[in-house]
Image 1 (cartoon, helix red, strand yellow):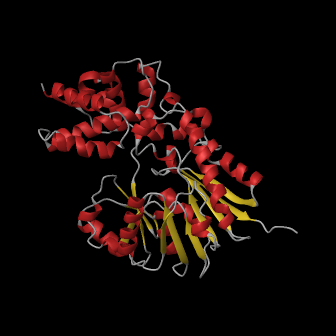
Image 2 (cartoon, rainbow, N blue to C red; image 1 turned 60 degrees about the vertical axis):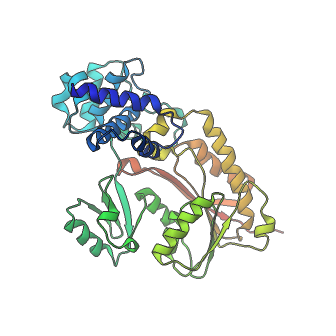
Image 3 (cartoon, rainbow, N blue to C red; image 1 turned 60 degrees about the horizontal axis):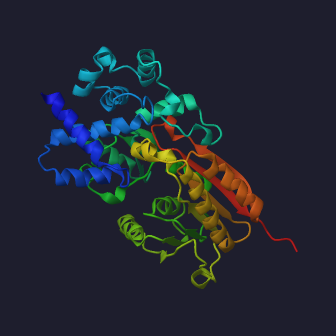
Length: 391
């Protein structure tokens, strides 16, 4: 009888969700409204719905419950009632490595095509190894934190005291199991910042100098600004975003980090902002552009499931328009750092080519940071230098 209970909970949840809200936010509201669901019910429903979306559009002709069993088998190393009921022949292989399990699914379901998990294959940026990229969708990324080098041992000591497993990625980066409740483990919020590994790695492109004036023009909740400030505390900083609630989160994070000296403005970068910024000239601009977010879909597989291809071009138009409106405030010889959390060529290399062809910008270096090999998100970053005008 218990498996029917699991099935009913999953089917009701799937039927009610339409992909508009991020899944984690939707689940919070859904569980609040369905208080008859106990903690075990909520845990299993969450596992099942995320597993289901991780399969993308593969095996779409099968019944949803059989698809769920296959997805749950590929995503986890512990079995479930759904796997026992609908995929008993593979249950004993639940602890095998992901690639071995993919081979077993292919053997039992000859119509299974790995590339249908991520159906936007022709859109991918150059250099993505598809044989690694596709299987990574069945592996939950880690939770990464950035820690001051002087504080990392104190953080490690608290993780050990609370029996939280961790991996020391670098002298300033720790990887933790996804879902770790850090606020219950580390008692001083000033000791760390939650920031994905690939996002941290974009910092190698910033190269701020003492007393520079930088603008983080799509600052959101301030992750890149905090990284910039950690690289060079003695900078002047303007942070802006069109969303006031994001800037409120930024102010809270800056306060926790002890950053008091900065300028903050609500700016719509699709408008002419000369009246606001007419006298500003920056030594560096961070443009973490609005994008498809396709490099983060392993964390948010519902976005993969509901995404439509036409949206890529909409984001590209947005990225080009924003870049055109910010580059004029950059001093000659100074860098524009263009970033996305996308794996689509149109949003990455193609936008960089557009910027080089249409503005006084020279590409110094660019990279798709392949987080799928490190249980992290994937990001694109390019460093472009504004050229001196001749004559």
